[in-house]
Each structure stands twice: as structure tokens, then as C-alpha cells.
Image 1 (cartoon, rainbow, N blue to C red):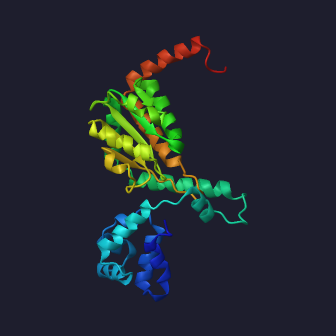
Image 2 (cartoon, one colour):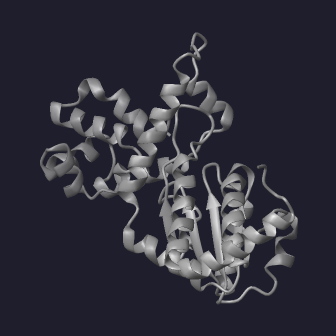
Image 3 (tube, rainbow, N blue to C red):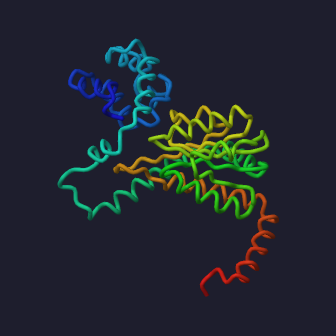
Length: 284
């Protein structure tokens, strides 16, 4: 992301920047996930400079104005590196493994804090209601996102008996043939996004189904197809994504659902306990 042209201009021009311009550049680089969505006035307030200084900064970088700079910052979020590029960027030949556990867990903690700060409670509550009211729930999650999709499917179907993770990409049309506006599709996708996830969400929206998207930022190609969008931070210093925050979102959705429908869920779990005992499911 920081290899994008807009960030290269900042880095290469640092020696010629005024003190205020350096403060703006540092803020944009350090907050590259959120800063591209700030207005000029909000950015100026956060950096503690004048709004006119922010506008002059855009011209200093040879953009047509702040909206032009902002567009390039947002486009930079869409440019996702390959796994090999990310590995090369985050790994040095002399890197040791002894500090990895603290490094990765610290990144996960930061992702959880960032996610907590950007999830709107009202939007979350409405997402829970959509899950409760859905006639059928279909989960679209491919590649690494399948891990979260499987977790959601297991618990949602356990208590609601109406949830299916569509595992075979080639068979998605058969599964969604009879989808209606009473159904809900939960789409999970994180960079790098799969084309099939985007295509499926676009199709179900055209069919009138309700959609809930869980993704990693507002520039995700899944966002335009979500009636509800929940953004979870996933960045760690590795070529893999951190799924601590998306998995916590999934856990929160399940927990909120069970608390809202606790009588129905309690009855269901009691029945299941009897069945599990009959088939001797768990180790004593």
C-alpha cells in the first residue's frame, strides 16, 4: 500500500516539506487505513494545522486539490500486494522468531481496539435482527475466509437450523436458485478478495436478498453490495491476515443472537444435550 505513488511522493518530498507539511505526511502514512476518508477540515483538526495548510499540502504534492489527493489515498487502499510481496516487505533475512508471539499478539490487540472503535452499535444491532428474521441464511466465504464462515455456520445452524455455508464455488448457482427477499446472505472477504465472492453478492442483491458484509475496510469491493457492512481490521506484520477481529465479530453476532432469542435457544440446547448424551458425543 505504501508503495503506491501517492505515498512515494510524500516520502521523496520530505526534505522539501515545511514542518506543518511533514506533520500531515506523517499522519497520513501512520493512519493509512482511516485517513483517506477524512475531510480536509477533520484532517487539519487531527494534525493540529490549519485547513488551508492541508489544501496547500495537496498542491505541494502536485495534486489538483485535496479531493484529488484524497481520491489517490483511497485508491491506494485498493492496491493490494501479492502474498510474496507482503512476505518480502515484512521479513528480513536476519529476523528472529523469539519475539514473534508478542509481536503478532500485540498486532491482534491493536486490530481489536481499532475494530471496536469503528463498529457502530446501531448497525451491529440491525445486523443481528436481520439474522434473526431471515428465513434462510447463506454464507459466502472462500479461501482463508472459509475459517470464519465455518465457525458462523456451525453456531448459527445449531440454534436456528437455517444456515448453510456454500462450500463449492462451482455449485453456488444451484444453492441460490430459489433465493428470495426473505433470505440473508452473509459475505466474508478480506484482501485479496476473490472474484466469486463479489460476483455472488452482486447476484443476490439483484435477486432482492438481504446482505451482510464482513470485510476489512470501506474500500473493499464487497461493501457496495452490503445492506449492512461491518469492518474489521486484519493487518499484521506478516503475509497472512489477522482474523482475531473478524472472528470476534462473528462471536459477537452469535452471542447477541442467543441473548435476544434466549428462550428459543435454551430449549434447543436442552434438546441437543439429550441427543448428544444418547449418541455419547463428548468425552467424559
